[in-house]
Image (cartoon, rainbow, N blue to C red; front, top):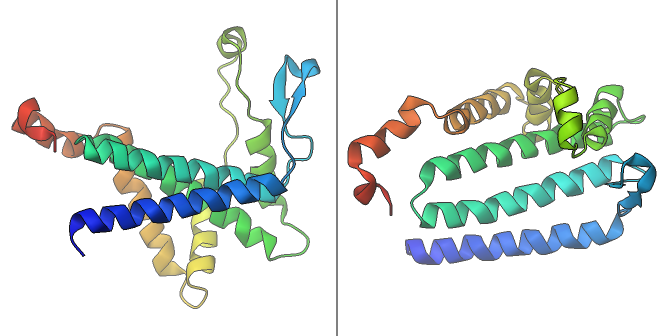
Length: 192
């Protein structure tokens, strides 16, 4: 298979994923307009399954974005998008790890609750608070990734997950080692 065929195959696979996420989305409770909350949309019953569908929807749009960015030679931006995909995938793994347990663990429920408590703020609200929404430390998420991907040897997937996140973090935070090549090649040579 030549590179063009591989790219087309990946595009078809992402389209299939997109259709799957859309089918799941039709099965979950949809957000409702809540005038009491400043005219915002909210999920009436935020559940782990809804969390998973929304995270997967974000992963699909990020996969589409990587195609456009790499086609245009914007590899650093595609790397930053890969970080989004990796973090969403790890969040999915973390919550999925809880779905196989009864009752659903409190730390997994906390992630779901925090996710649904975050909302788009008005400028006045943003300027009025500098408090960052609570998040679960990544070091608590890596073990869930390991257990799901390799129950017999969870250490290796945990290490790989950490390395991937740290590698692509360099694209998010404009690490010199991730952007230096663009400056040395010049703008006319750096795009594909």
